[in-house]
Length: 106
Image (cartoon, rainbow, N blue to C red):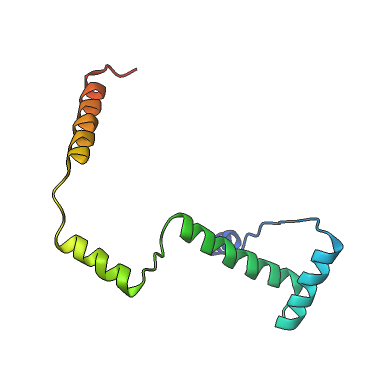
């Protein structure tokens, strides 16, 4: 059973890409400069870029300036009262929810 688990943990996928020769040479040069094989370099760089993109997309790593973080904390500490536009939006939302609850399920 442990042999089966270790086989699953080491499963690998394959990604292939055809690129212009100039791109291939650039990637090969960068890999040489870092001292790692081209495949390892590509995986490392693309994985890092993909993870950063996903984090930005999912807003996992929001970085605020000192001024912005102070403003944000002030807003949390003393929130404003809802204005007329927000109150209207909430009323419309509640009306929509009430209408959907009254509808029979399909």
